[in-house]
Image 1 (tube, rainbow, N blue to C red):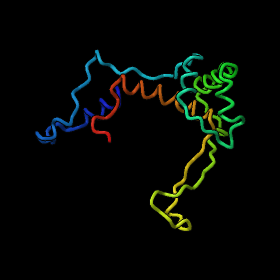
Image 2 (tube, rainbow, N blue to C red; image 1 turned 45 degrees about the horizontal axis):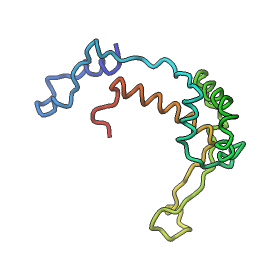
Image 3 (tube, helix red, strand yellow; image 1 turned 90 degrees about the vertical axis):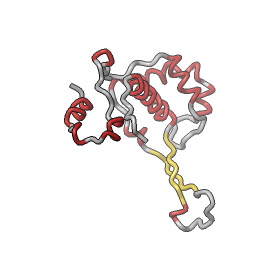
Image 4 (cartoon, one colour; image 1 turned 180 degrees about the vertical axis):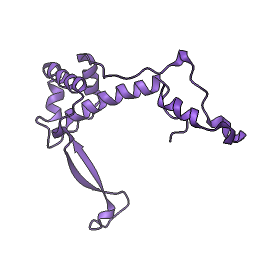
Length: 156
């Protein structure tokens, strides 16, 4: 039994007023059973290439090579990048080095007092490859959540 089904069963329907009845989702039928996400799917070169093309061309000081060089050498580096992405997905491992960021304070719009730290907002600059893997995970999770109707109806 799924967790959301257990929660629904614990709700005392008698305490819900008639105006609130529309907020309770109907029971899920067997034909709409939720598929469990056991692992991430392996990406093909063309899928990783799409991620690279969609990504911003910004570089980070932590990148081993500038992203402009990487984008210019995609045909040569694509098999290696695909192996790195797939290794991270299959091993469920995201290296600690890719979790490091360069944090730069940026002035908030409309502020002029540079010496008041409340007028600054931090901007994290992450390594290019970490953002590619992050996007690969996001795309697969979003697709799974969306196809199984797991988004809460009243989620903001």
